[in-house]
Image 1 (spheres, rainbow, N blue to C red):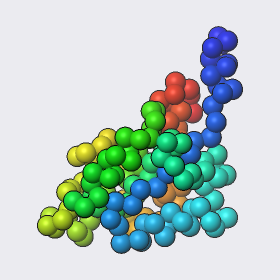
Image 2: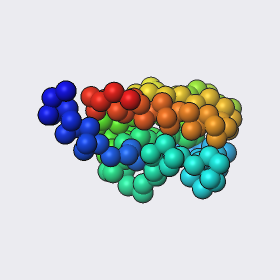
Image 3: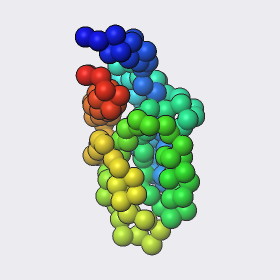
Image 4: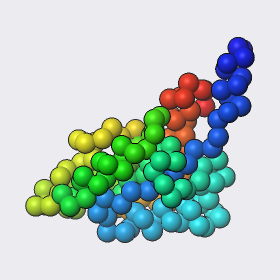
Length: 149
């Protein structure tokens, strides 16, 4: 193992999570809050923590269908997240539009506008599924950094 690889592994910190609500009904946001607050589903035991700024985030969790009203804002915030970043679509709404698909104010699935690495289906998804997706997103993030998970 080279010195550069050792130094790279030592300098890696835990990934930080950032939530974007693109117009959800709050079902997915309640389940995301469960992963942040209830010890049984604590996401911090996997080395992740929520942050309040997109400029500090490594993994972005997007909920809700992409509406015309917030599309530009979601894209602006997503572009503020530094590389390497991993995008997780939480719930059926960002994946396909959910019950709102083909509505007059729905732009469509989020992956038409930004690359999505992990999808978490469900309406709303269970906290266990969200935790599994965060663990998968963490391993993808480590691979993007050039480190093995």
